[in-house]
Length: 258
Image (cartoon, rainbow, N blue to C red; front, top):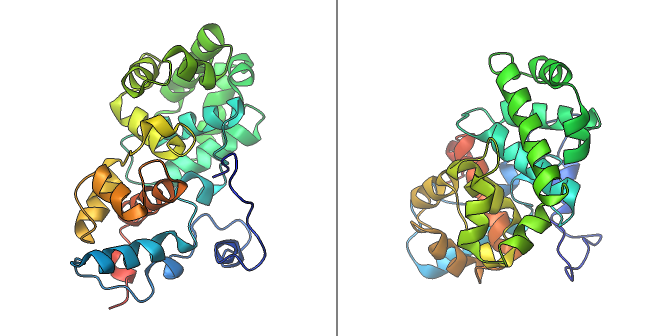
C-alpha cells in the first residue's frame, strides 16, 4: 500500500520475496512465508503475540495489494478497491471477487467515468466470463449505478466524499453506505484496505480478520490488533488485518507449522 512519506520497497526487503514465490498468473500468494514457525494454538503472552504479528506482516501487503490492486489515494485506485469490496461481499471464494474485479479493470473500466460509460451488457459479459454467471446482470447494473452516482455526487473521486464528511469517520461511513451496492459489510471491507490512507478511520478489522485473530489468540477487536501492530493509524495494521482476512477466507490455519 503506497502512503505518502512511506519509503519505497528496497532490494533485500523481505516483502519482495512474495512476488518471487508466485508463478506466472498465479492468483494466490504462497502462504508458507506467513505461517512458518508459528504455533497453531492460541498465542498467550504479549511478546508471543507481537512476534506472531511481526511474522504475519513481514512479507505481506495485506489483502488487495497481494492480488494486484494498488491501494493509493487516487480516484481510480479507490474506486477499484470499492468495486473489489462489493464483489467480495458475502462470498466464501475470493477468486469470485478477485478475478472479475481484475477483468473489469483490465477491460478499461478502472475509473467511475469509464465504468459509467460502458454498456451494462458489456459489464455483464465480463462478469459472466470470470466466474459470476449467476449474478452477472445484477452486479453489472449495480456497478454501473455506483459509477454514475460517484460521477454525479463526487466527480468520480472518493476523496471528495471524504472531504464532504470533513474526515469524520461516522460521516464517511454514512456517505459510503448511501452509494448503490454499498452496505455495512462493503464499507468495512473498503475501509479495511484504505485505513492507512484515511487514517481517521483506523482501526478497522472485518469479520474475517477478527475470526483469524481470535483463533490465533491475537485479540477480539480491531483495537486489540492496533495495539499489537503499534498504532491504529499504521500501515502495519492494514497489512495485518488483510493478511488475517486472507488466512481465514482460505482456511489456511492448517499450514501454520507447529
